[in-house]
Length: 251
Image 1 (tube, rainbow, N blue to C red):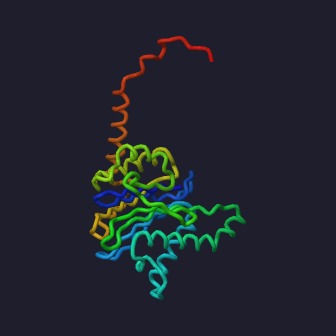
Image 2: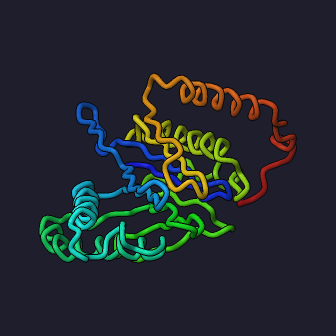
Image 3: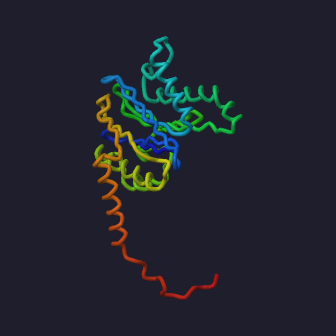
């Protein structure tokens, strides 16, 4: 299991992913879930993945091979806009399905993959897409400016309450880290290190890409102070005054 989240803002985009793929008492693996494709000044794309690691790694390899081939095939360097980039990634994912789905099914393995693709190409505005295992996708909107994949339920409430299109990149990075901390605390299968990637609108290259491990002082501070703040907020709420005030009615 993994957890990835991205937010599309007026100021740019924030991407955060963990790197844990398998968890157990004595078996924990680490694989990066964030891939960056950029030609500074021309285009920058970020792809995050969750699901079956063999499927998503094969997809990324196929994308990179098409980009390196220079044989006229469509690739992430040649697509004219982000919609076509999402369509291309979806088609590549369907190609993986055509190759491997039947073999996986014969071993009782489901074809599972979920992707987040975001970035900016040329003068077009930054765009963000959630791509499903079938290769189809949806796009972020002003009303829903973020996507999550993987173990999303624990980190969703704080994002729903806070994020807006005018949220700053610094605030969004902080929000993503709080969302990740909530997920890590509730699910052993999500864990460090994390990849935090920030794109500024119209810069057309990665503004910041940071690997966050257990020694990262800022993330350690976020984890400690957020827990303290939640505890203080809970204690400050009045207790219900109706408990024990009336008789229990008939069922």
